[in-house]
Image (tube, rainbow, N blue to C red; front, side, top):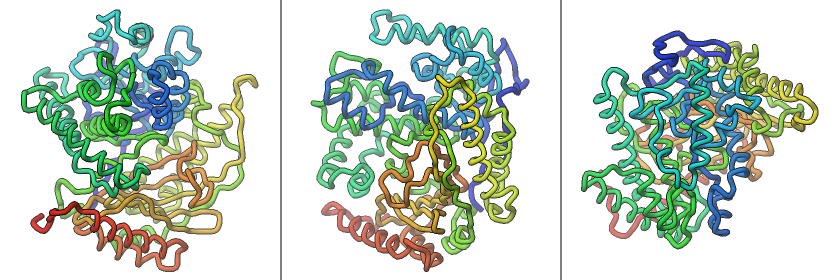
Length: 541
């Protein structure tokens, strides 16, 4: 038996929940969040795509100097989260310190009413830490000399305006007891973040090299530097201090004498850019894990697999996966290839007004219904075309068509351009750092393997289903198209990653790409074994 999300009630934008309403806002526990809720890293005010980060560092600029470009790049993932996921959980600070979000609900914004509708419906949920109200004034506003004070003040006034008009949904670990809430914050977020940072030193160089596109020598040097980050974190924890992202930024990322909010990164600090990205990824993944929901990482950023979370913390016999059974289930799949239809170029072309209309449409309601039904019973994904995996993917393509029609109804001056797009469906299986993709392209099923596998024993298994823009299976960035969706269907564990891949691939003999996938996995296994440091002995584990 695998871990499966339970069925959820999907809320369209025009509906408002009536549960727990107090003081004109709705108090939710984190356990009240929909099983399909996500934590989107793109709304983090510190997130910046790797390419733009490199440019900022080389030119000696601040993140505040490239805010407009950053917003354009992050917006596609923000809008994607609102369309693909029934509910998005947002850290309370990001609602007022990130212009990407608050520009949609300033007094002069034409999207303000639509954002309020999304807040009313619970599509956007504010995550509170110690605050008891959605409009508790942040301490950061007490420092008028702060570099980002003007941004904070503008965002805060806009957010207060939303709170006065909307029935904001706010979530905490506990509303009954501040003591219990603080303890949950400590255990689920603070301690887990510390543990996540401490694990960075265990990242395998061979996998880092493959995942980050750096040579093995640089990957080894990076891990050595991460040992310094870990040692500093241990020193802070040992003295009773909280290990926070801000403290790590000040020590290893930003220029001395500046604040993380200024975003002035110091090239003289070793591996500054990669260290920042790893810390940011650990921070956002930790928040999602703390509330037991999924982390949505940006298409242009580091993927969660880079953190190498491969070892199952608990080996529940009910969640053990059989490679032959999983392969038999997936190998029976059949999906249509969607070819040469006009679609938007990117989700960034949509406004919040568009999002509200899309979420209120019959197409989106059908998609959300199919999503809920499939996640409730993933083993039946190919039993019924009207409610299984094919129905979900077909309804998602329907949402993309509806999104295009909604956007094109805007006045010509603001209407986006469209282009012919091809879409393919893929089933993905992630084990021990490698991802198996079973894709249904224009010529039929095809297989590819990506990532950097290690010689691993017991490992986590994650199965995903996605629809992506198609540029060819092996062309660069074929799977990072602007319009995509990926759903986690099930998770579990296997006793041996090597045995899993061997038994799993046997069931796909004759499918194009299988032989290359097998050869690639064997090569990586051998390389990973040879890459062990002198003196390493794992025989006792």
